[in-house]
Amino acid sequence: MSLDEALGTEITRLRTHLQWTQQKLSEVAGYDESYIRQLEKGTKSATLRTLSDLASALSLNVSTLVRRAERRREIARSAVK
Image (cartoon, rainbow, N blue to C red; front, top):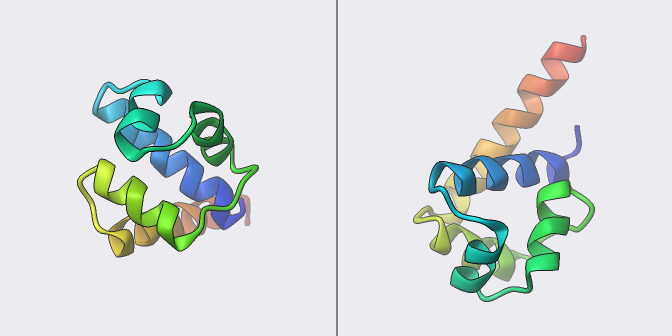
């Protein structure tokens, strides 16, 4: 699992925990819904600005969001071994 995929999975988890649609997250964060979809799939890489906007929308700081994605990636790597 790449970091982009792990980040996308974590964004999806946080968004669904809030019971938000991709459209709701896109509105709150200020991005197009299709871009949110690509980030969640891990097919796009987020810039630092995007990470900051998403973290803010999800009531987190950037470091927490990235740390959670890194942890998710490490767990996925451990499961493969």
